[in-house]
Image 1: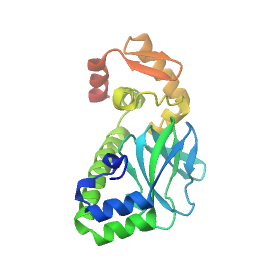
Image 2 (image 1 turned 90 degrees about the vertical axis):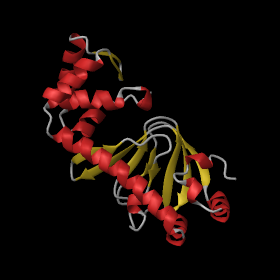
Image 3 (image 1 turned 135 degrees about the vertical axis):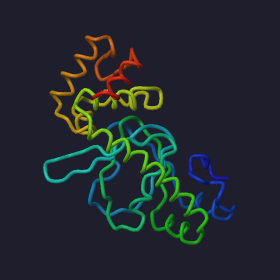
Length: 216
């Protein structure tokens, strides 16, 4: 059985022979924090499953840059570009990260030859995509206080422990200027809603943060 097979989404839907094929055709690779895994527009060759750590997916158009998503343990990166030639965004690690890397062409053959597995993977990917789209749409209707509150509620907890985004990265994620982020975080600290230490942010008053999101 493939070591770290539990990290492969819907692994139980693969027959033993395909599990063995994945074992033979995949590899586990460690990346250091803040290392580029692939760049937007470059030829897409691999599918990535995060065994440990956190990354950021970034889309750039001209001078404008936006963080699309921060994948974590067990997330699969690549279902959206499986049938495309190039990576539609860049991926960089935020922490020391361990990946299970599967060649894209091989993974595509697995999905094509196993409709049940392909359906399960597609449903899982679409479910996460819809969840993220709802979050982003809601974010777009918020003022800066509401957007920062949404950010800290989602990313400043045990699910994303140690990602320690810079203020610029927070701005790239929620769509407000770095200066607005700094000012809002300072206000939240002064109101005893948050505690900050360098890049680390901890919530002190969850109820108030949720209230800000609701009424902003």
